[in-house]
Image (tube, rainbow, N blue to C red; front, side):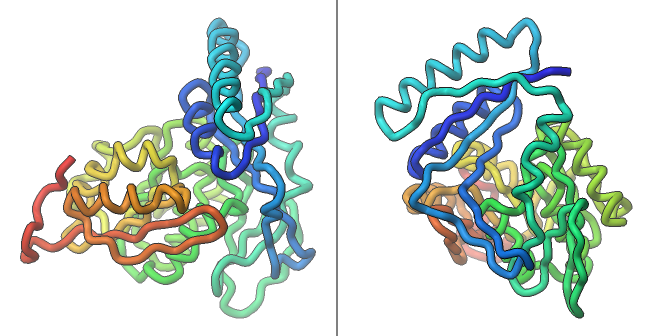
Length: 312
């Protein structure tokens, strides 16, 4: 199968808007900040004075031209408001898409214990390491992006033996796999993209945790995830989707269950936190890496004043 790769380079403040546009008309969104890694993975940093590369993909079918035109028009309008380059398009075969970026994906350490190990790299573990063997294939989720790294660091702090976890927008499955390796009993991993579902299942098998990770195509609410069954929810998705879905995430959480909302630009954090608090969430902490934040919030227990169902 052949695809069109549609990409643009945008200033950091415009990335969220570009991602929303690409998510609406493309298939999958990849956000590639200019990342540099030391050979041993001990240090990974982002060159913040350079634009961010944002990509999406279109299968060559009867809707390709319509979707391409929508993307070009949207990028043109965004370019009138921010530093967003014109849309670039190239044709790729699936094997090109899956393999072209691999030379830029290194072993990297996140937090105190987690080590992300590309399946084609050599790695010698240290005592206490929690290795995540990963091949993202055609799914978003290498662990390089700050939104994913923030979630992984939260997991190191919040995961405990026997908890049940929801990973919404699982991508490569990296967060679901990390949750199990850090003690989770069960993870429900959901993604709208069929490609991501296949990749996440492959990575769960690669890490020998498939028996604890249920990967399905879809979102919440879902018949797969019963109401009140989740101790910790991880949602590493776009701001607009977080605003739409936080009431459904509330419903699947147990009383005093927690949610990590990632994918929020720092400039948008006050507005997002205000929306959560207006819906009954208790904001606990916010962590930031670069221009991105992850928000930790809790569904209050029934004994707390004002607790109940989330208000939209």
